[in-house]
Image (tube, rainbow, N blue to C red):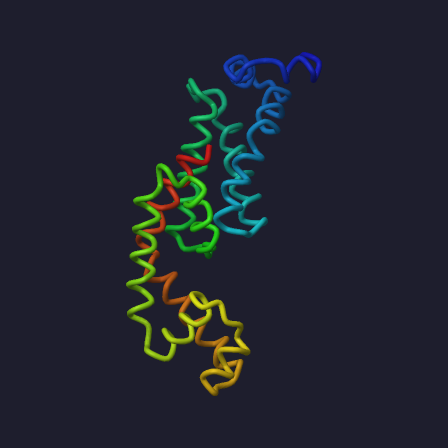
Length: 195
């Protein structure tokens, strides 16, 4: 084993070779170098630190377990694909609730290459809003497009604030479900640009 500072200076290919020979320090160096990126990608989608930590831990546990048999030429590419697959699997099994606003923010961040995705999301959201029951659609539109507070909406429509909250919750739940089939594609595209 080499001193810590020397490990940090080595390129990924050398660290991977040391990892294949059960070098824990090489593994720790790679973990510290890439775990933050993987965590950040997951957190921007899930906004749940426990889920993110679990996904990153599983990714690196798997890397350690397969260290002798893996033939990785680019560790960054390998981790990008692996975290993308873990995120997509998590979405498919519906273990996590995605933060739609986070997805929209990330999509805007990569605007040049993601205009089509952004347009598709906007179109699907508009279609989803149009399919909401009339009162629910009206409340949701006042909240999200006119940026009225729940209290202002309640006053304008002469209903209780609790009714406004319930209708917005119903609308968001419906929109998440209606976008569920499309979200894995959006997440995959975002992750491709994120790393």
